[in-house]
Length: 198
View (spheres, rainbow, N blue to C red):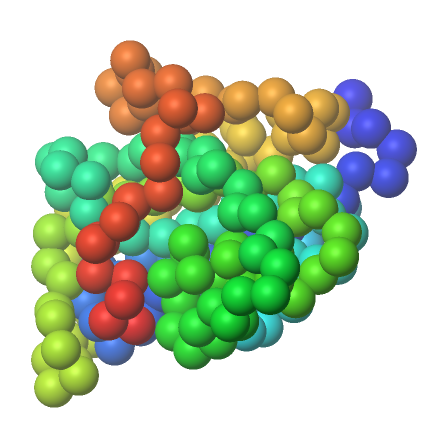
């Protein structure tokens, strides 16, 4: 049962010109064919970090970011990550407003808003191919990540009803090997996963 007034954002994150970094946008495209309930705001933010930072301030209970993140698993493995919410730094320089590193976007949103951020979960896919550098444009995703797109859609269809009923719940992924033994609340947001190249 959906709680009255629960607001949920599902946001695709990634650069469609950097191989497997396009995972987030590909999942959002796949959701066009198998939509989530109308109560859920689904949007592809691509590499527009500032847009996502402001969207996170729009009164959501929970936001699920869909992104590629190198965490040392087999390519195509899905993980559910709950990063620590950044604190609002008073008197500090504003965080970087360009790019789409999720940790930087969360820090920027915390800097911009007076209200607490929503609970943020990251549905991450282990990339196989991730070009580095501005000159490495490589559109198209690898086979393991392409296979993970439909599994991510299925995982979202499992997670979303749980989060609409209780935004504080920790929904399981659809396959036990993808989150087994890894308590999502204890996992940090990946650092050095190539997001800084976006």
